[in-house]
Image 1 (cartoon, protein in one colour):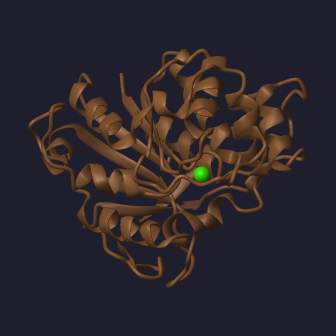
Image 2: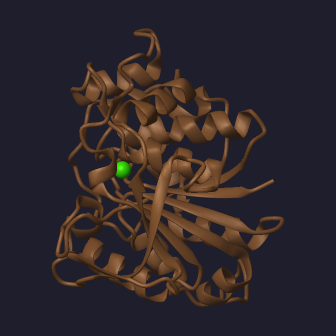
Length: 291
Ligand SMILES: [Ca+2]
């Protein structure tokens, strides 16, 4: 079975929660093996609230949080609400880079990584040295075990486009630049233009705790679908079958500004996706999976 690690900026938006449900449901249905999560933002409640959400999904897996990321007081309403339903505390969770390294090193067979937030945990894993988890460096672990990376990020309908995940902070810009340059395996990118204005979650039962997350975020009418669309495409495992054409291209991100650039090149192991169908095709697909 295919193994998946998820990187998420859990708490920066609510479509991450929709994506987490996609993966938890796919795991429970025996379609994938969801082996770990790394959170690439850090508040007192980020890891405990994701723990509680996954507990409700009956999907107990290792959760790490980026301890290098400055802890902020900023919080949305769904994090404290979920976190107060568990006795887990921030300090009970490991650093996300260790979770990534362990999940990759210990997985039976190859691993795929889905990133729906900032890329610094992936970057630091890639650049990591051998340690007590594995004598292999991050690069060696990737070459041996990581099959594919799926990223929600970038704006691929515009040269010089800037999108939140790849450009919001100086470390997001740097991380995106490094990952796109150095990651040895194939990367598929789903850009901002794909999920924008494509609303999902609006058909959830109002008693569903996922619906409450959307309400807490201020989106009772549903939310744009960048993260769940990326998760569903990764689970399907084939861009074409998921409803996209792909453009193979050399891609780069400016490490200072986060602006993205691309040059079509059939020999590249980077590609971005383009929708083949009307928006309703994808919104129906997301709503069907998470309802
Ligand atoms: Ca996200």
